[in-house]
Length: 103
Ligand code: HEC
Image 1 (cartoon, rainbow, N blue to C red):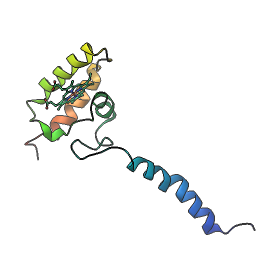
Image 2: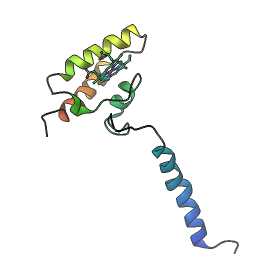
Image 3: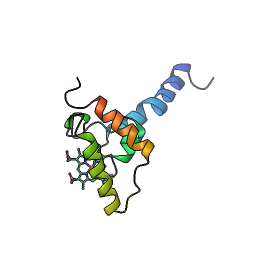
Image 4: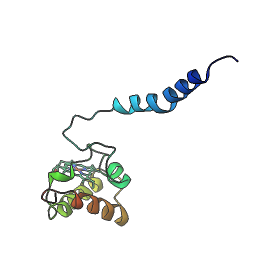
């Protein structure tokens, strides 16, 4: 018997639960934009490449398609990979279901 069960439990908790959450909390989130961990993966990855992903409440439902279309142009001019049709549909769905005026 080298160490008690509770020591092992605490070590496991620290390694797998506390440490990763400390690291995750050190990320930059100044509150001006949505938390980067929220929203579908396509949104977090596709809309977080040039700036932090925007808040869905930044625009109305009918404005988001135009914003996304403009972002696609930025991707083209900056030589970034364009969104697939599937990704832009998922992003539009997420943004419009949380957009300004929907809650
Ligand atoms: C290729 C880089 C790039 C990517 C990727 C990108 N953006 Fe942008 N975004 C920009 C630039 C540059 C601006 C500032 C100029 C402008 O507003 O067009 C901007 C500004 C914005 C703004 C603030 C202006 C406004 O109309 O409210 C929003 C909101 C926005 N982006 C949303 C998005 C969303 C949603 C995505 C994912 C579909 C995205 N962006 C992906 C480059 C990018």
